Length: 52
Image (tube, rainbow, N blue to C red; front, side):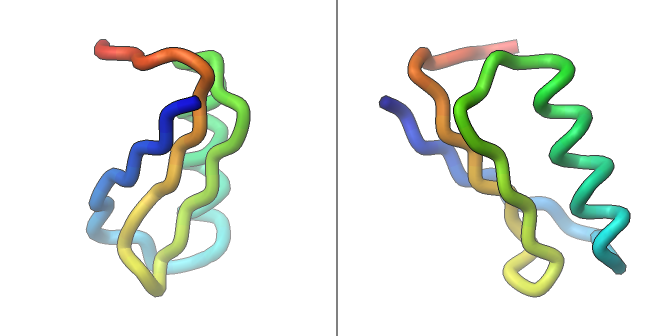
C-alpha cells in the first residue's frame, strides 16, 4: 500500500476539495483520496505506485 501526499494550493471551499478528489478518482485507481483546504494538501492511498 502506498500513501502519497500532494501539496495543493488554491482550494477555497468544500467544492474545491470534492473536485480534486473526483478528478483523481477518474484518472487513477485509488483506495482513498482526501483533500484538505486547511492543510493545503491531498492524501492519496493506492495499492500500486502510479506515475502519470
